[in-house]
Image (cartoon, helix red, strand yellow):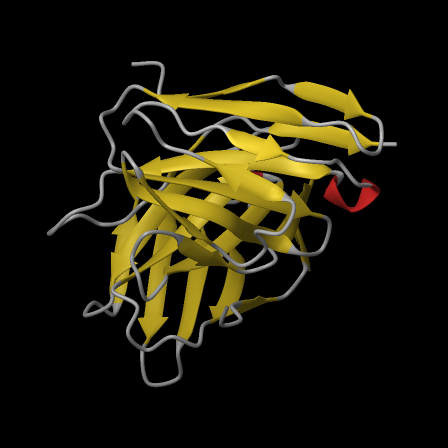
Amino acid sequence: GEDVEQSLFLSVREGDSSVINCTYTDSSSTYLYWYKQEPGAGLQLLTYIFSNMDMKQDQRLTVLLNKKDKHLSLRIADTQTGDSAIYFCAENSNSGYALNFGKGTSLLVTP
Amino acid sequence: NAGVTQTPKFQVLKTGQSMTLQCAQDMNHEYMSWYRQDPGMGLRLIHYSVGAGITDQGEVPNGYNVSRSTTEDFPLRLLSAAPSQTSVYFCASSPGGVGQTYEQYFGPGTRLTVT
């Protein structure tokens, strides 16, 4: 399928903001998603954004969408050690029945 | 609701053996999918189903079969296990339909090792 690209690693200090970036390729995607995976666990939906929105805020999470550049970002304010996990960007596929995932960004939060 | 459940959590197979990974959901979702997760590869779609009796292939279907006889269950069968099928397998479900957000709800995963 089409590639969703993410950087593989990010390290931040506790209390700082984290910004995880993603580029996607399918301009027809209706929704874009951020999932979180903690070690040994399944994927948990963090948030999603509708393709006609530029920004969505949900507590410490801010999602920015630039449709022209097909760029999606997730900002986590006041990052905590419990935020250490792998974060996946995803777009709904053409069929809508499944998602196309990036390879995931491993976020390490150090004290 | 239990959500999406998967069994077993862990499995070790020898090359050539067959087995079935079980997946069930109790949310009355129409769409169900199987993904595999390999290090550095993200999640890749194996097979999916848009309703009972309807299945289709995803990105990496070779070596796997599925069926969907009920809305709740979507088992994944490995026909003749190979070391390349060592992976973590995730089942997911989604409400589907007009006006839905297509978000997927994931099970906890099955960790499969083929020796």
